[in-house]
Amino acid sequence: MKINWSTLTGPTLLIHKGRAQRNIATMQAKAQSAGVSLRPHFKTHQSPIIGKWFGPADSTPIAVSSLAMAQQFADAGWQDIHLAIPINPRELPALNSLASRVTLTITIEHEDAIELLERMNAPFRLMIEVDTGYGRTGISWQQHARIRRMLDAAQALTQAQRLGLMVHSGHSYKSHDDAGIQAVHHESSSRLKELLDTMQWPGGLWISVGDTPTCSRMDRFPGAHEIRPGNYVFYDLQQRLIGSCDWQDIAAAVACPVIARYPERGEVVVHGGAVHFSKDFALVGERPVYGQVMNKTDRGWGAPLGQGELIGLSQEHGKVALPANMIRELKLGDMLVIVPAHSCLTMAALREFIVFDD
Image 1 (cartoon, one colour):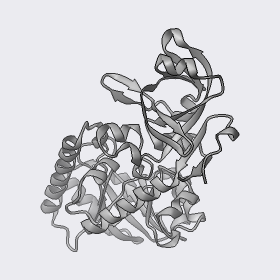
Image 2 (image 1 turned 60 degrees about the horizontal axis):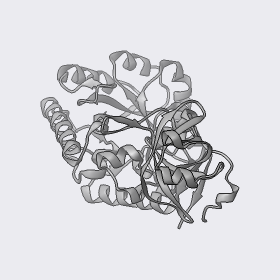
Image 3 (image 1 turned 180 degrees about the vertical axis):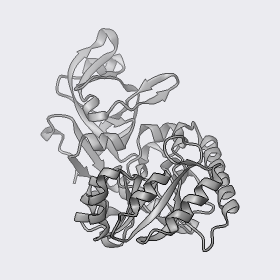
């Protein structure tokens, strides 16, 4: 299916099926070559339609970032689901219900959560989140004794079927090139190894790691049993700028109509604002950029338009810097195709989309 540009009226999320499926296949091959399982993080696309591009629902393990998302994919047929966010005590009844019908992996990062899990009456798998440098959630990798005590306590839980450690090196998103991504990966891997060597847990632990930059650029994942990248299905401007992908790998963009033109300041305004793109940005030098304008083609989009950038957002408006000659040629209603800074948040904002292929 190709895009019929004449039918688009407002901000429209476009998904390039061929590119997305190629990205999926590339990561599957990488995981197989590295000898690890692949558990794609479905928070990026949040779509059962796209989810089935990864393989049959009942045999594809996945990660999600909310209970609602876990329920959505369970209802659509997925059976092995990792809720990769620390447990929320208010959701315990729903977690019990979900664990009774799928293989559910729960994430914790504090001793209090173990007491909570004593109230689970359905079997589940348990991951303790370890922070190897990101600084968001997780117990510091240096707290060897504390993590060991938590594992000992978790082992006594009646319904816990498998114990493991989970790492997300999200600080790789702040890298600037392959060397930076590699440095984060090696540091995180060595810290995890030190922790595991110190504990010497009998029978071993299930180790889950992963983020799109390291999974895209690295070939080996020492100590891991599975990797959990998500953004790689579409990629985006952030990933391109840090070197995780090339332009031809990016599989998501937003078509936005021009609603105002200001040649005197080198800008046009599109209907496409923060409610469509979020306010995540990528740094181009020292400048925050919310999206990259692409050359619109009959088959979607081609190469980036060098001087075309989404430079400002309010709720519904997007300010776009463009070359003067292009502004002169544009008419009100013309569509610009913009690759977002962060495809995950754009997908969450624009839940409906058009799938096309070459």
